[in-house]
Length: 84
Image 1 (tube, one colour):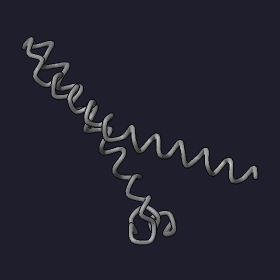
Image 2 (cartoon, one colour):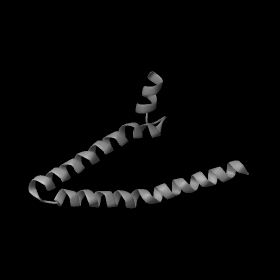
Image 3 (spheres, one colour):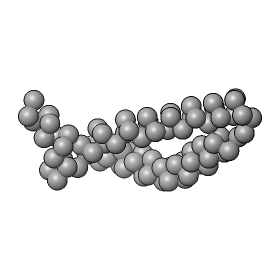
Image 4 (cartoon, one colour):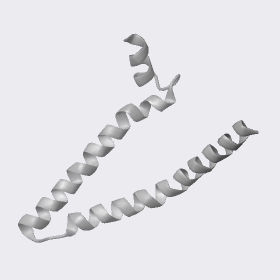
């Protein structure tokens, strides 16, 4: 148990442990905004929050697509290196 807690909370030794906490918090925030946007649009007929959600998703896609492509390329190169 202490080893697991060390991996999650000791970010100096295990920097990837931050994602164990950050990803669920980001998903909760995204779904909260999506629910607020849907309720605001449904109850008041105003699409302001839906527009904010769409712009946020666009910014997220623009930020993450290059990193995803770089990850795919590195996986392909690692796979080629293992076969050679």
